[in-house]
Image (cartoon, rainbow, N blue to C red; front, side, top):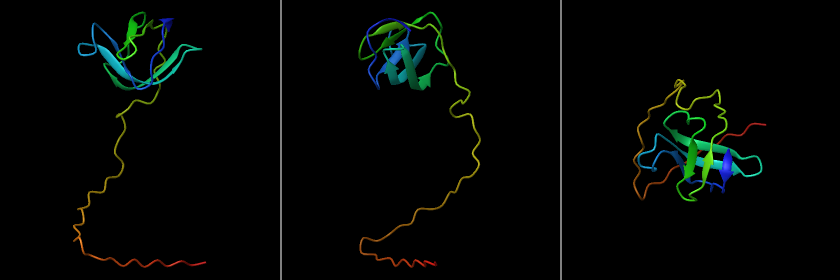
Length: 105
């Protein structure tokens, strides 16, 4: 990323006129000012446009995107392999419980 200023961890970055009307937004996971590498999470809006700028909502830092490294793993793209829907146990305030543990060596 080219430009000046440093992004702040946990701030939102966005493309567009404001965070409310952004075409892309994400939360800063980490920012390395030595390598100008920005890692983000909680992405809204797909992949950011290359050559466009990202603006920090808190720091007001504006930097231009040189390249985007889109990882192979996509959030929320997997399948649920196991789900256990059990009913919650209702306990009384004065209830006692006994646990028995068997250890074998």
